[in-house]
Length: 219
Image (cartoon, rainbow, N blue to C red; front, side, top):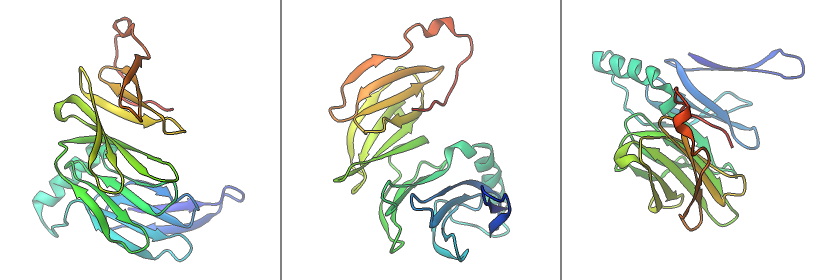
């Protein structure tokens, strides 16, 4: 697998970043100088865009060379590719990642050190980040106890818990970070006050008119 980059002006390929297995996800840092990728081998890699060099590598699932179990896990991760992600904070200083195993980690981009990590939240479906000048918050969508949590981005400790009537599938902060939007199966959307943790309203209260569910949305 690999990441390939093309110029949007000339449409010529401007870079390629090889991986030992398929790539599940990749995104640019806010300044465009770094790339973070999630690979099928369980590794999350931080790349220097210009040189193509790997600056840091973190492991959500430790690789087991020539292991049948590892290959099976890789196929499972591919099937559940929507549940393995890594995101930059708004200032580009932190990468927050999660895997299908439920592990969430926050890593310092400059040093490569893991700032905090937790396995205590159960199966993680999705995460979202919100950053103000003074703090970073991480919203975690988990199937454990049908809830969404907001964590302190500096410590990983829970700040708020948002209970749902069914399985929570997706989560987004508003652009100003003051509101949180969550989506539960089969497609009911909730609006919350992200600062106080208070419930505001259901965005689609007449969901019973739908015959098919949906699991992702955009804010």
